[in-house]
Image 1: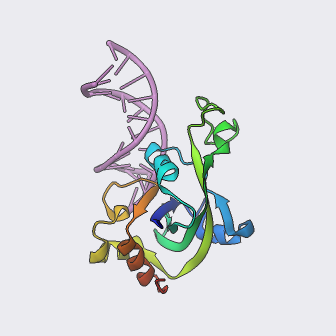
Image 2 (image 1 turned 90 degrees about the vertical axis):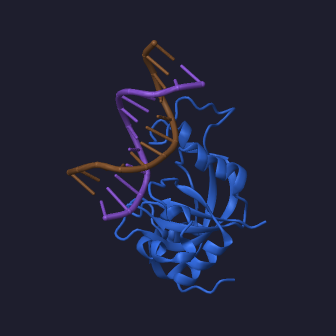
Length: 158
DNA sequence: GCCAACGTTGGC
DNA sequence: GCCAACGTTGGC
């Protein structure tokens, strides 16, 4: 069953263009340190799921492109790396606390869809990313929301 | 840079 | 197990 997701990234740290430029256009989605987001990766995300790549803390904020899950969640290596911001001294190698899926770029939206446009779209009124105070960095997206965002972005909906 | 909203931590 | 304090997120 294919599902849909939205992931947030600060483009100053890792933008959709960075994903397009990455080897094989893939990256491990490491550094997630929120239990709800981790649980989505562990229990929800499957290879092939569609992903909206959202730029947060940016000018403008909004959806820049689409990606897909290309590998299921494994232990996030940065939790064991003392030099990493994501280092977690409480996490044990035999029972890792934090996980990371792998994402692969699919394509940039033809038109970047700003948050303002998402908020203005009645079909997206219930979408998590437009809700006030919603800061989850990995969010489930309904098929209808997925189709609507792709249409706003000028991509054909497969 | 501000600050509202939220998640996590830790004292009790 | 409660909840105040704290740190972080992220829009503006």
